[in-house]
Structures are given as structure tokens and as C-alpha cells.
Image 1: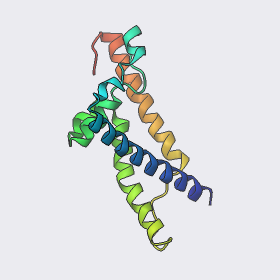
Image 2: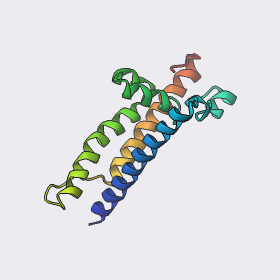
Image 3: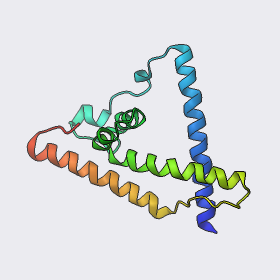
Length: 139
């Protein structure tokens, strides 16, 4: 039962994020605001030259939606993994809500979030390790 409530919470959060993102996008388009103003450069990277765990995430998300999945994976692999999972999770749970449980949606367990966190940590260690030992910036 705990997995059901956890999944349901993630479902509602995901749907809210999609709704707010669409509304925000439409407002920015209507006001003709440059989205770059809302996403300043990473302070950690600016001050130290090292990447934070989120560095490359915005570019990866943009590339994902443009259909450049390999390039998106290069910038931030957790974005592709999360988006592919959500592309199955959200519609399946919407069907569950619409059919009142006759069709069961995909479940998210806390272990899935730990796996996603592990992917983020590994990519962060690799990118900063390459920079530390070779001086080469990967993104």
C-alpha cells in the first residue's frame, strides 16, 4: 500500500510540473521573455571550474525534447532515464485514474529514485574526474 501512495504522490507532482511548465512556457512566449534569464549559469562551475550534479541538465532536457537523445544522454544521462520512465509512468497512471483502477499504472518505488540519484553521482564523478586529471571539460 505504501508503494501505491508513493507512486500516486509522484504522479500528482509530475502532472503539476507538466501543467506549470506549459503555463510558464506560454506566459514566457506571450511576454516574449528570453528563458536564458531564468536559468543563470552554474555558480559552482563559474567559481571553481567543476560541475555540480545538475550541470548539463537544462541542455539535456532541451536536446531530449528536440529528439537528440544521444546528445542529451551525453550532457546528463539522468535526464534521459527520468524522461523515458515518465513517458510510461504518467500515461499509465492517467489510465488508472480514468478507469478507476481497472487498468493498473506503473509503480515508482523509492529505489527508483535512488537509482536515478546514483546515475547523477556517477556522471558527476566522471565529468569532474576527467577535468581534474586531464583538464578537459566534457560539457
